[in-house]
Length: 245
Length: 245
Image (cartoon, rainbow over all chains, first blue to last red; front, side):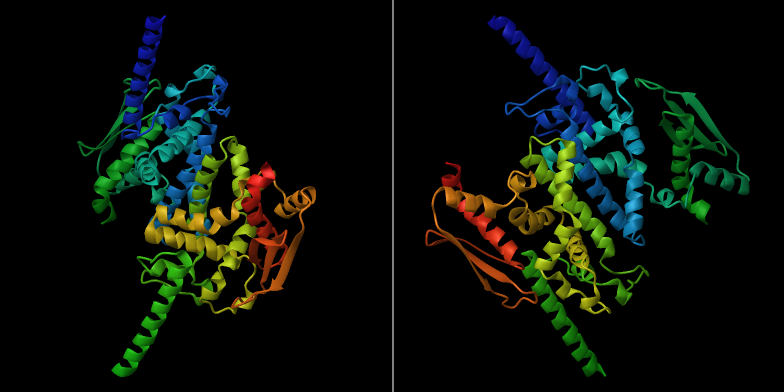
């Protein structure tokens, strides 16, 4: 009996170790406590309770994560958009933390693969991705506090996705901006697209934007359109001085 | 000319020093930067602009302060109400940061006395108090970061005003709870009320709650009812062991 128990213990601690490694890769630093992250990926269908009889699942962490997201994004916008009044800043923030956007972020990080649930993954609605993303932010806050939470939000949202010019409606599409400029400057351009699914469950596309026979921007995304836009944006920042001259 | 300029300089720096002292007393620690606090008390009617042409008044700081308030209160409720689900926590937070509650807090701190405006103070609506409170929280965040902001919110809101039992509807009124207990235990009780306006602009009342000839709770507030409730609550915590026995 004790041998069996030990084997179980070994298996479970092995799983814990694997989970710790995955979380460390995901968030970019080693957690102090593993429990909040375990809760962040526990679905209510497991009907888990703690020793005080309180339900353990990711839903309460969503509340916490949502609050931290709002605070960090508010701070960022306050500094970056000095001309925006209160109403304008509020509107910009809602765009950034929109359900749709959080779903995309959670999906891109593959959070649903970590969930523990009695319901098969295929039966979750789309909002599962955003909910898990919020819960993960809440877990980071509980584990490491505001500063680390801020770091994670910068890494996953603000740096790759928050584009003030675009949010302000000054740039609708980097692709069209770039094409216009190429035509005006009489430069040739091609978007070379190929399948690049790699280890991802979802289909992915990679694109190379070639201007005058030189690769200027590369990107990878879940749709051709998104990959092209991403590559264009990168190219835009590379060529910015020339374009704005 | 230079003498006059020096006098002006002296006067203005004297005023700045006075403002710094007032802010230090108000927030309970010395600011690193004074500018955010100056902005937090600048009304739009002054039409102030910075060197980049952006409007300078407290409205943008309200956006920031509101976000920080929501985050700190979310964290507090998450820990203190482990049995509450997401929806319940959200509802409790809205009660705490309600417009009416923030107005009361701002009014109690006398924030409106610090405002710089072209409009006379008597012409502001009631929301000025809550707006200035949010802006002050925003200024503290800008000046000293999340941890200090949290400290200030604990000191001004959470410790004196956030009463989970009451918010959860378990205790509606500490006064009636106490009176019931006195009657059951055959104890005499009196609420001794007297005017105690002191240096405050608004009328204030002080109350001493005397149970069996002993002062058990004292309080001071802007209405008799509020002062009685506050004194009862304090008495409740003093007598808690006896009451719950």
